[in-house]
Length: 78
Image 1 (spheres, helix red, strand yellow):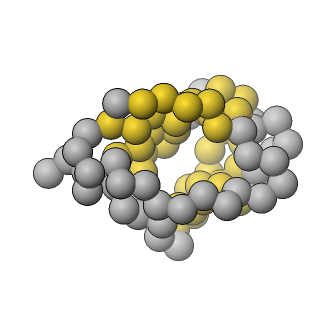
Image 2: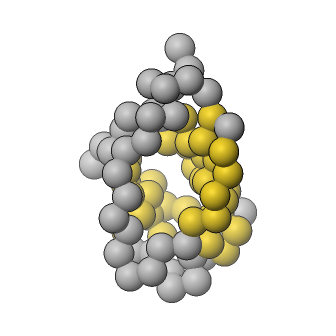
């Protein structure tokens, strides 16, 4: 398992990850797009992204701060 503080500025350029991932939104709001499907979020929300799924944040506030937790085997939990 690993943990990072993620706070994109302007545009989110991330790619898919090999492990399952949780974002814990500490501050801000916006949309998380997973495989083309948009999910709105706000401070206090927790977002799940399965391993190997393309995703990125859009229309997010300038103050967005999240903890990103990666865990489990490559390819995600079975």
